[in-house]
Amino acid sequence: MSSAVGEKTITRVPLVDLKRQYHSIKGEVDSAIQDVLESQAFILGPQVKEFENLFASYCNTKHAIGVSSGTDALLLALKSLGIGDGDEVITSPFTFFATVGSICNTGAKPVFVDIEPESFNIRPDLIEKCISKKTKAIIPVHIYGQCADMDPILEIAKKHDIRVIEDSAQAIGAEYKDKKSGSIGDLGCFSFFPSKNLGGLGDGGMITCSSDELEELIYMLRIHGGKPKNYYSIIGINGRLDTIQAAVLIKKLGHIELWCEKRREKASYYSQKMKELDLATPETMSFNKHVFHQYVIRTKERDRLMEHLTANNIGTAVHYPVPQHLQKCLAHLGYKEGDLPEAENAAKEIVSLPIFPEITKEEQDYVINSINNFLSTSNN
Ligand SMILES: Cc1ncc(COP(=O)(O)O)c(C=O)c1O
Image 1: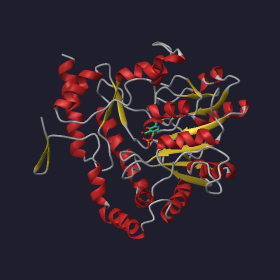
Image 2: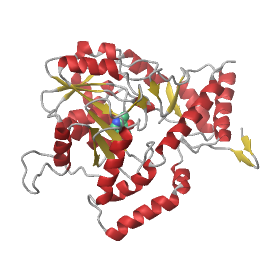
Image 3: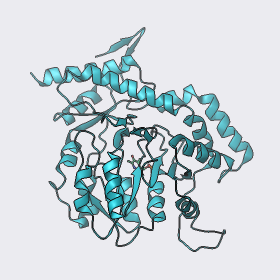
Image 4: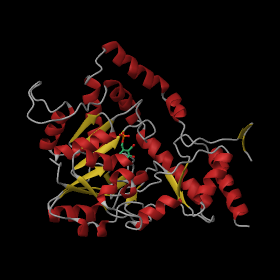
């Protein structure tokens, strides 16, 4: 099978192609790296602060603190709230393991709440009955690039005097009721993993907040907890954002709105072309502006569809195959199959299709035709 683009015939489509983005802004990226090389200021050089300021202003928060990864952003955010041994943190099972691993690494216990099948995000109306005396925070995860329904979550948090940390790793630029993700809860955590919508050249992350007290604590925790240097009243980690990453991310941040818009356009093209097909396309909640970090469809034929797409050289993935409450390392928490049915069903039926700002219409047509062919043969 193939799809023609002018002279060129499409015969493969990657899940994501980072080279295209790099080549579209190569001059900016290369010169940003060169500047850092010339300065040799690799650790907390001036670009880190500059990027933090730009990021805070992009997200509409008072502060942003550059850190070493999205995972460390979550860990440091939890630590800044004093969360540790004996505490409980409520979150979604339908996330990347880092959300949960970070909770466990503070010594706290994750408590899982099932998801809404339409948005794949945590179901606010199920949260309250999971709150105990030990609950210290809720981490809603803005999965695939659209925000969880934050108002009822904030209301519950206020009522029980607990904090809200947004896991915005997949949702830079996403909006909930005109508010940017990361500016809604007490703290927002972002990832600059290379394939994220704002991707670095390696690991990187950011924490957003508007509390001066939390900002100061996170700055300390990011450098082992020392203030002044070599004097430690708290225990932190080595969790800084590299200057090279910050320098490159400053340049990339200038393009993020356009890239988000392109992702929305590509997603809308897929959805429009697939609306007659026997599968579920993503839903955007009325209060949300989605940034489509992933474009995820649902079908009971998921595994066979993936095999078919792979045979046609189309990149796909399952984000994520095991809902976190069923991970082996968390068996001691006592969750079993059937406890969180919406997350479990979704994990069996989801598949992520290729999406990135530079994907062409012809590539998308190739993907759509492939799916179409599969469905028409599998229904017969
Ligand atoms: C929802 C979610 N949370 C946390 C992370 C962790 O980010 P990182 O890979 O930068 O540590 C990721 C990304 O990988 C993620 O998708």
